[in-house]
Length: 303
Image 1 (cartoon, rainbow, N blue to C red):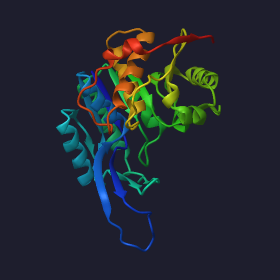
Image 2 (tube, rainbow, N blue to C red):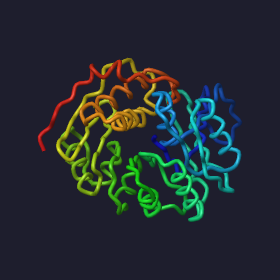
Image 3 (cartoon, one colour):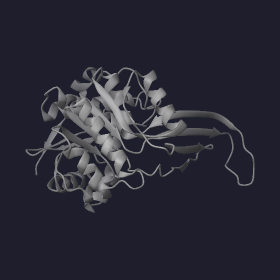
Image 4 (cartoon, rainbow, N blue to C red):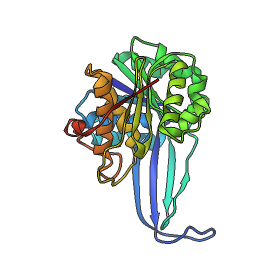
């Protein structure tokens, strides 16, 4: 079973308006949407769509935390969140014609006691793998991430910001940086596939056994203790790229939990992402990566 941890989830509010955003003016939206947001939450939704056992946990509070629990219930995702007094953050995206404005809140302050309770919650479920993803709320830091990883006999996967990866002291089985996070963690600018390979190998030397680097439309790279593998993205009709990186990581972790080897796990990740981007929004009820895996090409790169 894969248990996902979202330390700082959010309710993502997306507002569309039919005109440019103006100050000192009351403007009406043409559409609005609310979604549960956060890397771990997305991963649990995708695992459920793969019909794989998962539990979603993290730290929530207030009416926005209640929304997240109820929203995940509609997708049949099992949840076991730790409650705090302050409300879960809300992230707002405003979409005038041809533009995008984002305003993200910091999230509630999380005391050490809440992290202790989160550890107890994870131990109660005894997962084989935990996935820690997204940003940290105020008062949590890298030492808390290390504590979560070390608190039980499980493997740990990470999808966190590059500056946080630099501060971790524990060793980790998996991580999934994108271009920006690779640059943050290593200082290497990612302009080419070779740049990505160099940065991913350097990140591996920092204590990450397998580095699955997401390069968007340029595909993905997997650096293992034995080899460096590259797979271009599949040529599909892209409708929405929201959640594409999370779905790729989900597909690879799902494959590893079934005992698949590295090349097949990379194929599963790229195929899962290709399936997701053909539908609107990150929430999906069924995923079938195996129908696309034979179309994924994989090359072994020299170290």
